[in-house]
Length: 210
Image 1 (cartoon, rainbow, N blue to C red):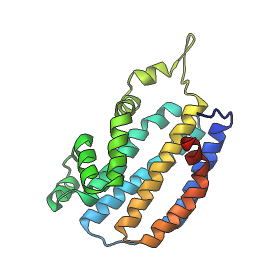
Image 2 (cartoon, helix red, strand yellow; image 1 turned 180 degrees about the vertical axis):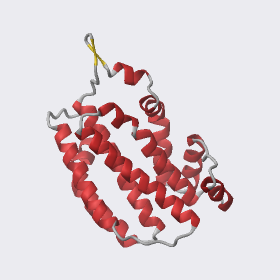
Image 3 (cartoon, helix red, strand yellow; image 1 turned 30 degrees about the vertical axis):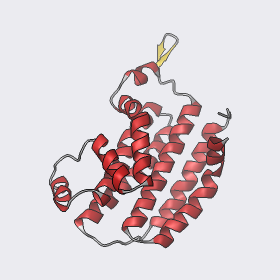
Image 4 (cartoon, rainbow, N blue to C red; image 1 turned 45 degrees about the vertical axis):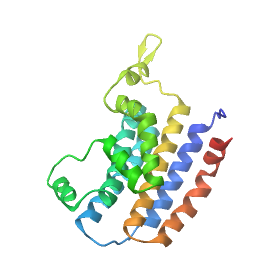
């Protein structure tokens, strides 16, 4: 991986640019207001808001809390897809009435079967990083180790890791925006979201391909 002393600055710029672009494109989006669509869009909206929260926390150097937000952001995205594509009408109604959604393993497996690529992305992230996400959110050893610097207790997340988190949160926000476009059955919106996202994150994708 390329080491860039300005990695965090660049990630903050990408994150900020994407927040502005996506907010402009999503403003005023309409969709059929069924219970299913309202649940799906609300969860994707929450995913997008968690990206905004992560950005704000990184800006304020509150990094442990920023990392703790990544699991709920991922869950909001995955649950939004599941209630959009996999849940029965009864599942949706039970959720609105307070029943917990399925566990992430079932959500990921169902999505991989039903939705193709979006589901496979959820399944891959779940398999690859779920344990770490849980540790960040629930105060696992990773949070303790990141607070030990010599003989001091203070947060000690690197700029590089903070930059990676911001990019990951922004990508989830993009996927959530595409999911909202799908609920709205608006292929033109999806195209405009892609056209806005790609130039902002070109350097990230090129680095990952290198």
